[in-house]
Length: 349
Image (cartoon, rainbow, N blue to C red; front, top):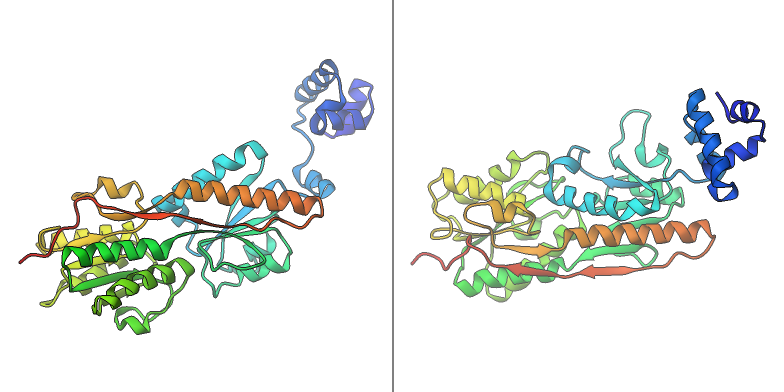
């Protein structure tokens, strides 16, 4: 079943049938309705999407590159909120969202092989080849939670300022024994010296710098535990390294709320009362923060605003690329602020 089949059945030209599907403003409403009815009766769905994309030079889809497995996009509350905001922003444009893993599997390399009109690079491992492939394809790109570049629009959060506020809160409460609970793909892992921390990404580096800005000024050398980001058990392992010891910290600064959740679980298992014996601060203020008991003190970032800004920047870049114009460059930094709840208190006497 083809456009020509419908045209012969209706006694009109092939172009007229094509316009009924792709350029409805070129036909009267009555003629278009009769053509679509005939197509439905004959079992014709519409022009082949691949052929249409080839003719237009566009795919109608944008990619988002994730360092983690694609499962992360459906299980992490921050990622799901971020992706939901992007999908909502893209809705009126007709663009579809395609998730791309940054890992290579056999002959298929998603960043190289999947047809897309542009891509968001979201908190991606700097050592990944995915960004290089997309850049070489000369696709419109927007970086999110990545190192800012002069040539690419970037959407970031004031991570360093937010981390400073979190560390300052603990210092002002009177804490001197403070632990940092972090995660990352590349080693070293376990208990490490703060000077030996390997930073996988921009947000992690900014948060570490913010913590150390305040702790260093206060003369505090933190105890640092760092675990891989492979599964939800890893934060619990890191928390146990910090808490199951005689000289355990009286407070923890956690890279994310999900990691802080693992610390709360370990504290409960070890019989450590939060916040009377241990204060815990997260980062992100995802929905989990208010559901935990005690409710989590954390650093708030507007995840939905970040998703909307990222989608808007990418659609603008795609539009200018189609018009053969220079894409607009934006460097947006969204605020991050401390939200004090029930998981922090002065250290026990």
